[in-house]
Amino acid sequence: MMKQYGIDPRLVLWIQKNTGHDLQTFSDLAKIKCLDSRKRNFSAVKNIEDVRLPSWLVVKEDDFSLIGEMTKLKQLSLHDIAIDDYSFLTRCRCLSTLDLQDTSFSDCRLLAELPALKKVLLPAYSQLKYTEVLEQLSCLKEIKEEKAERSGETEQACLEKKSSVGSPASCGPLRLGDTAHLSIDGMGIVLFSAEVMKSVIPGSDFLAQEFTVPEQVGAHIRKGDITAFCTGTGGDFTLWFRSGYPDSNAEKEFPVMIRLALEVRGGSLQFCDLFWLSNWNTDFPQDQILSLPDGYYHITACTKRPESGYWGDDQIICLYFNKLEEMPELTWPKVPYLFTEASEAEQDETGAQGQNRRDYMETIRQLYGVEELQGYTEEEIAIVKQYFDPLPSVLEEFWKRAARTEAIHKVQDKWIKPGDFDQWDWLRNSDYLVILIENQGCCRAGIRRKDLGKTDPPVYVAADEIDDCKWTLCTGTLSGFLQAALAYEAVFAFPFQGKDFMYWLTEAELETVRSDLEKQPFGLYGWLGMDMSFYSNAFDNMVVIMDCGDLEMLYGAASETGYKKLMEVMEGLGEAI
Image (cartoon, rainbow, N blue to C red):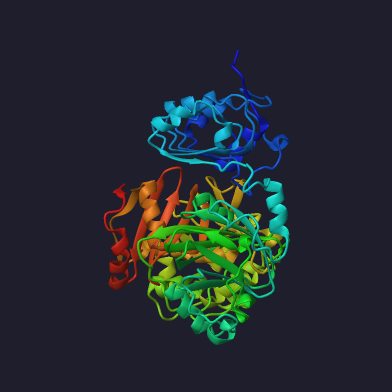
C-alpha cells in the first residue's frame, strides 16, 4: 500500500504559489529551492479545494513536516504562522536564508544543525529558548524588536500618540523595518535630512524658489541633498521602510520601481508632502522622521497600483535604503515618476534612469541600433482581424509603427507576423492571440480572447505542446511585455556580448548587479519557466537576470561605448555555463 503523507492546506497553497504548479511526485519536493508563505502568484489557485492532491498526500491541519523533504531548499520565509514542531528544519541542510520573525519559533538549538545558514531572522528575544546557541552561529542574525513599553508607555499608547496630528513628541523616530502612514495633498513625496538642508531659511517658499521647475528638481536629485518622486496624485499612502535592496519576490510584488540616492546627516531623514516645502519647516512630527546612520544611501522606491485601480488609494510604497561609500552618480534629468501611465506624465530621457519612461519604440532604436522603424499596413493587419477582433490598441499601434522592422526579427525567437494567421490553423483557432513564440516552439506568449477589448491587456505564457491549455500570467500589461521581450531578444543580437554569453550567477554577485546598475521597470515571468529582470547603466546596454531556481545571466550592448560602461560593473561576475 502506498505511503501517505499529511500536509497542512496552507503549505499546499504556498508550494503552488512559489512553484506555479501542484505537487505530482514525492521527488518534486526536493526540487523546491525557495518557499515564501507571502509570495503571490496570480495564476495560482486561491483555495485548497481547487488543488488536485496526488494519492500520496492527504490534508492534515498543522502538519508542515514535508518542508523537511525539501532537501535543496535555500530560502525559507514563514509569516504569521504558529507551528508546534519546527524539527523539520534540521533536514533542510542547504538553507542559507531563514525568516521566522513572525512565527511561533522558539528552539534555537535547531539552527545549529543548518551548516549553510548565512542569515536568519528571528522572533523577539523573549520568545526564544536556548539563546546561548546564537552566540555560536557565524551567520547574520536579526532579532525582532520587543513589543515592550518604551519610555513608560505601552505600544498601544505610543500608536495613539502617533495618530494625533502634529504630535512631534510621540514615541521617537521610525526605524528601518517600521511602517508609516502619510496623507498628501500634493502629487509627490519628498525626503531629506534636515542637517544637510540647514542652509534653507525657515519659513521660505523652497517649493516655488527651487523645487517647482522640473530641471531644478532633477538637479537636486542628482546632487542628493533632497530627493522626491511624483506619485501622480494626492492621497493616502503606507510607507514600508526596509534595508538593502528589494529581493526578487518584492520586485514581482511591486513592479513599479525607481532608484534614487540621498545624503544623511544628523542621524535621521524627514519625509513629507511636496506642499510642505512651500513654508520651510524642519520641526517634523516623529512619525515623519526615519532614524538612519549618517552617510550616503541608495533609495529604491517600489510600488504597485492599488487593488481599487486608483493611485493614492491606500497605496503601499516600499522604500529600501542601502548604505554606500559615496554619493552615486544619478542621471535623472527632471522629476522621477512612481506610477505607470505614460499619459499622466512626460519627461525627457537623457540618462540611464530615464529608461523608466522609455517606450518600446525607443527600446528598438537604442538596443537594436536602428533609425527608421517599419510597420505593417492596414491590409496586412486586417488578416488578423478576421480571427481576432477587436485588436488591443497597444498591439495595433506596435504592428503599425514598428513590428515589421527587420532588426527585431533577427533574434532568438519568433515574433508572429499578421500573415502567419493565414498559414497556421493553430494560430487562428487558439483562445489566445499569440504574439511571440520560442524558437523551438516550446513556449509562446499571447493575449486572451476575452481581453482583446482592453487597451493594454495582460499577456500570458504557455509551455510545451501547441495545444497546451495551461497559460500563466507573464506581465500585467501588453506594453510592459513589449518592453521586456524586446529587451530580452535584443541581447541575442547585440554585437558586443559577454565572452561566454551565458553565465551562472551567485546571490552575492546579484547584489552587485542590483546596487551598481539601474533596474528596469519591466520583467518577464514564466517565459521558459523563468522569471526575468533587467538592469542597465546606458540606453544601449542590458543585463538579463533569469531566475529558474538557480540564477543565470545574459548581457551585452549595441555599441562599444555602452559595452565598456557595462563592463565597469560586470567584469569578473558570473561563471560561464
